[in-house]
Length: 263
Image (cartoon, helix red, strand yellow):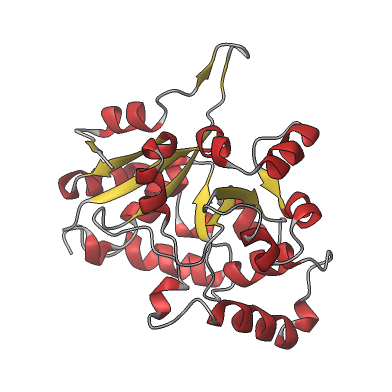
């Protein structure tokens, strides 16, 4: 995956919004989703992968146990995909990665950790219309039937009620992006969606590389640029206070905002 380095704030914005113009609509409506990482060199590993060891067989046990003990918090629609969204949202190790439709939300997560300001950060940009080309036919049909480009939990549940059935839809891994239900203000404010592959041991950056980039690019935010980006995000109110509503987010914002500028 080729890295594209931002030189300044203006150039960074140009890179993040590149290709957003839709001539047919005469509007700026991007087909991209974004993921911010505080360290550009880190791969796209899932929380399930980070368990280490023989983690793949643990996936079903984790989700099954989560559903049993979290019964009182059950989503309104009792499907695997709503449960998976709830579990990911609350930190259960899953095969999913967090993404957002907002490049500025992604920039927040690339710059909010002051302890990593000495590291280059990055924003991954993936064109979901490009990754959709590798979907199995049955999922193509679902998207076309709904006139959509990104799945909902309900759309996936129509085709694959379980992860095992999802994985069997094609012999080769494929990538899916889906919007979770609006479980709380955090998901809404982060303009959030999830991405996953049809194989728990496959890594998305490897998959993108094997599929001609899959419409993806990685915009690097150099360490020297992080303080400026961070201050400008604060000024436009892209902060923990907004993205993580509640006292925890408020405290995280204040702790960072009043920290020394050169940690």
